[in-house]
Amino acid sequence: IVAGEAAPFDDKPIRYERAWGGCGERALERRNPVGRGVADDARTLVDTPAPQIEWADEPVAAAGGSHEPAGLGAIAAHWMPRAGYAGTFDERWQTERMPLMPEDFDLRYYRSAHPRLQLDRMISAGTPVGVDGMMAEGPLAVTVPALAVAVTALFDDGTRDVVSPEVDTMILDTEGRRLMLAARAAFALGRGKRRLRALRVEPRSGCGA
Image (cartoon, rainbow, N blue to C red):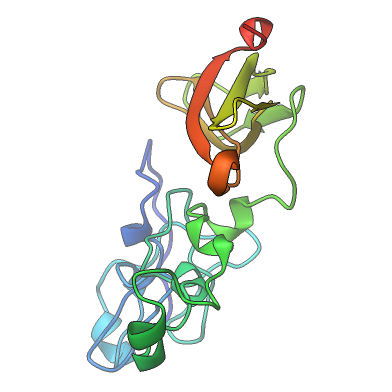
């Protein structure tokens, strides 16, 4: 069972429903259960839409086998590989640790970007980013700006910690042709007099006020 000849098109949504994946009564692609191409019996795929979204280095030419689902959207929390980082919710967890997360919980569970879109370091200011082939208007080229903000942690003993948050999520909106950034800063809750009381986000120039 092979994929038919590709037809020309003007535009097409980049959705996981159009990428490799899917499920049957027995077969299941846990990395993309809503996709196309996975079936209990490959013969049932005849005259059905083939995966249209694929990686250039891993084209889907025929039914069967295993492929890495392609996409640019967020990975659902119950899909792999995210679900594999959630930890073990067993009887021991219920009796000894609930409602806290399991001891083998991995922070990578919170990474919703496709594994191919994840970086091994924080996104620094001045980094050039480009997207090509996704818009009729032409390529989108941007430079990651510096975030002129500071996060101040106020503690019960009157002390404070001031940090510059690091950018850990970047979203390129190709329709609005804009760049959106999310930054993160973490503080220990503490205990006793050194207990965290409040967080304040403000322009860096005023962080000493």
